[in-house]
Amino acid sequence: MSIAAFGSYLPAEVITPTPADAETDFMATSPLFRPPAERHRIAPGERAAEMVEKAARPMFERLGCAPAGNVDMLITNTLLPDECITGCGAESAYRLGCEPDLVLDLHNAGCAAFPYMLKIARAMITTGEAKTVLVANVQNTAGQLFAQPEIGTRQAAALAGDGCGVAYLTADDRSPVLGVHVRSTPAFAQDMSPATGDGRKYWEPGSGELEIAFAQEKSKEIIERGNNLIPEVVGELCKNLEISNIDYLVTNQPNRLFLRNWRNALGLTTDQHLDSFDRCGNLYGAAVPITLDMAIRDGVVGADKLIVMAGFAHAGDFAAAAAVRWNG
Image (cartoon, rainbow, N blue to C red; front, side, top):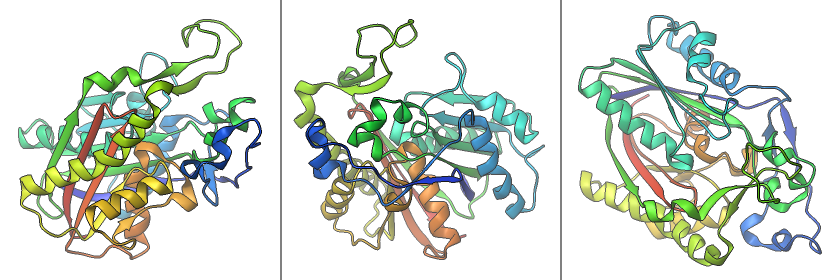
């Protein structure tokens, strides 16, 4: 399986950080929550499927083909699904004018979704179930969840940015995906969960704002997991594939400290670890395809480069890494 192209979409609205009140929010002075210089925010009513279309259509135009008739499978991951039961896959396909035989909406891979989607797509292409796959990562919480009146004043809200990244995968070896390594730790799954402040379930009526909450008693442990997971899964991937030199690393980008700690642990320079944090903020799972699309189109990443993509999800219950030999 090969990655034929990347695409991305960033909403038009660009916002700059508004520091939280240090007297009411202890995170305002934490180095973990130093905000980016700017970030993008979706417009009111903008849907995840619209974001997929705006990221994918220009990519197909650059490839010189239309989505119609050229997508056998569509895989999506949306951080905040517009519909509580279905994902955005079917609507995205309709907007693009394609009718894939297989539509899969993933909801469990979080910031590690992109390598995970590559693993699934590779299995489908290898077994002959599909010849072409479109994968899409949507981050859409900055203009929705983190724009709520109360939550929007917190320092953590200043890190989130919206955007969509896509990739088109084909059954050839032009830019081959060399391998994918995943790690699932179900015991950590309940260390992050939706919360409303008034004890109700997220779908029950009430006045509390929906937020993503981490187990406070495990905060130190969760930070340690975050620091360790990326170097560990990348190291395991490289060992499995007998990779000794990485040209570029691209990861999810929750904050500057994690980015620094990850590249230091892996012995990489700042130039080798690509990110778009200062321009886009925390893009969650969409950070990997968006950052790569930017770097490739800006000429930062040339041909015959070994790129490792990695992410860890939620409070550390899932992590994944993938390697591609990029040839443009």
